[in-house]
Structure formats: structure tokens, C-alpha cells
Image 1 (tube, helix red, strand yellow):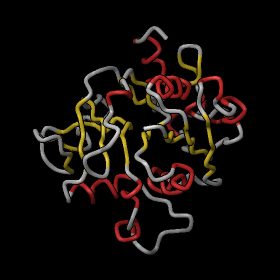
Image 2 (cartoon, rainbow, N blue to C red):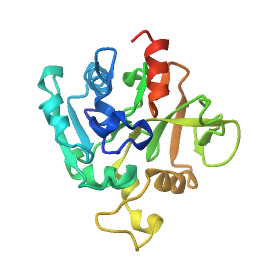
Image 3 (cartoon, one colour):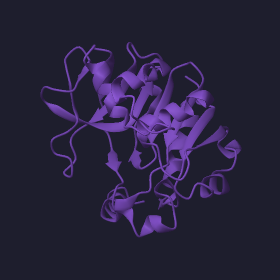
Image 4 (tube, rainbow, N blue to C red):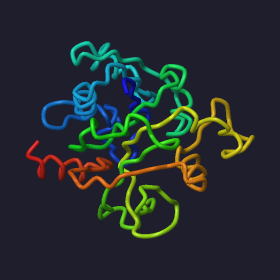
Length: 231
């Protein structure tokens, strides 16, 4: 598994005013931008090609990260326009740069000590999701994980999607059948719509990650992360 996608296009409304001048993935954590933690871990896992989705303050990403050579990576930027395309539209927009092989995709606004080498290089279905215990701000979780390692939209116990997964490009095939024909062009939709449709066909696997993970969604959670991890 040599390719990866990082979602970094969001406006980070809940992180304002910090994100008025800096994209959320470029906010400093432990002396380096949040997204650099991902780049370092991807490089350590053998990834050598990363696509970064951008929109809000997009010019700051190449200025800060360059071509990725300092991490032994090749970085390409997939600009989504002035309006972010959500996770589903963003992944669809980036597919021409990612190729046909399975790829890792990561939310640019999380922090985790997850070992990316533990992710399956070839998902048994259309995607493999890393799930975590429900954080206080999301007590009801997102999905259920059964004993066979399949992820379901319903059931218990509930877990939260970490924003880390491995995907096949085929997940995006037939997106119009799920999202609907009335979408704007380029399409703007959440990846969860496609994931839930695939779950109904038992095509999404997952694993329960019990390590360190934070959704860095607000200034308070950013401060808590720095304090908890001494960053």
C-alpha cells in the first residue's frame, strides 16, 4: 500500500478564531503542524505518495509542506475549489491522482498514535475502518463492529469512526445511485453515505483501536491534547 489521501479542505468553523488565518491541519501540535504527524507516520509505514485535499486557505499547504521530499514522500495537492466538497466529494475529486490500488485515507484534523503498518493493505471488502471508543463529545458513536470484523450502521456496542481507513476506489462507483442525481457539480457529499450503503451489503470491515486518539475539533480539545500528551 503505497498511496494515501489526507482530508484537509474543511473550514474548521468550530476551531475559530484559530482557523481564520490557519487551516486546522496546519495548527501546531508539539512543535509541528498537526498534518506533519500524519506525514511522518505514513512515511514510516512505507507510503511514498500522498494526496492532500485542500480548499480553505489552500495556498498555505504547499508553502508549509512543499513537495514532501523532506519526509521521503511525493505530495500532490487536490484543490476542491472555494467550497469544500465534503469527505465523499473530496475523495471522488482526488481519485484521478490516487490510482486504482487501495489507499489509506486520514482526516487531517485528528491526532493518534495508531500504527499505520497494522492497517490491512487489501481490505476484504470495499473499505476497512479503524474504530475507537466513543469520546465524551460523541457518546452515541457512529457504527457497530461485529465479532466477524464487519461494520454495521445499526447494532451495539457503538464505536466512533476514527477518520482512519483503507479504501478501494470501487467504493465510489455508482455514487450517483446513493447520493442522488441532483447533486451539484463537482459533487459535494459525505463519505458516510457510501459507507452505509456498502455496510448493508457486508462490504465494510473494521477493527477496534484502543490506543491514543483525539478529534482535534475545537480550541479546547486542542489544548487538552497538548496537555494530555505533553506536546
